[in-house]
Amino acid sequence: MEKQTIAVLGPGSWGTALSQVLNDNGHEVRIWGNIPEQINEINTYHTNKHYFKDVVLDENIIAYTDLAEALKDVDAILFVVPTKVTRLVAQQVAKTLDHKAIIMHASKGLEPDSHKRLSTILDEEIPEHLRSDIVVVSGPSHAEETIVRDLTLITAASKDLQTAQYAQELFSNHYFRLYTNTDVIGVETAGALKNIIAVGAGALHGLGFGDNAKAAIIARGLAEITRLGVALGANPLTYSGLSGVGDLIVTGTSIHSRNWRAGDALGRGESLANIEANMGMVIEGISTTRAAYELAQELGVYMPITQAIYQVIYHGTNIKDAIYDIMNNEFKAENEWS
Image (cartoon, rainbow, N blue to C red; front, side, top):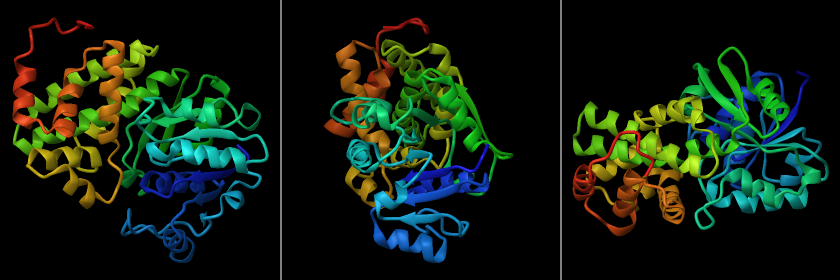
């Protein structure tokens, strides 16, 4: 692939890690953010210590606070901003971008009030004459591992296979490999909903439960993620791939996962307000829980784990009571869909 110019919107942990991958592949990388001190740190010291204390970035990675500068003549734009501001940033891009570009996103969540997937938001806010079909970059990936060039395999999904293949070629190298998929609904819902299950898995750990319980929540969590995704039009096979069970395993079992850590703290009795204040990073699983719960109610999809976590987070239900309720639900066959 010829050298591409890529604007990475969002200098968080994952945006920074993906910027390094793209730079390693010989592309021109421009990071855009709205915190001047952070942008200055990246440009002056080539660090982003809020997320990576011991990592030095390549000096060719340049950061901007001016969106117009960051977008000038770019071949592609990668959104890696929190779910709740995706629409706002997309609106800013639509007003600023003056040529057609490949639009990608690597965030995981659902818009809190509309319950919409992020590619839908980008479709709505960025006119067709300025973009390709949206590419979703998602899968089992801790930024802490990717930034040190540990092996990572994820998925590029787009309704248009050629656009997904563009992202595949753009990112892939000896330590970072992408597979293509045309099931955008499946890949996006898997990436968003696994954060809810990770909160639950962390809570079980915080409460002192063992591996049996953790395996159960991952398996049953995957079942209800699949039910909701299929109700939205996803291919059920997607959930057995990297963006499905792969991402659920890595997020639901690791201390690197901020959603798992948030759940662990909840299980140990910390308040949600205290957890969010101390984390210093967005916990997407919190807002996604409400969106997924409301969406499941709307569609009539059975999601007992999501419902339990929703009751704990938003209605103050005792976690042990929520677990008791799940364990005393009516008996069902394992493969029932309702």
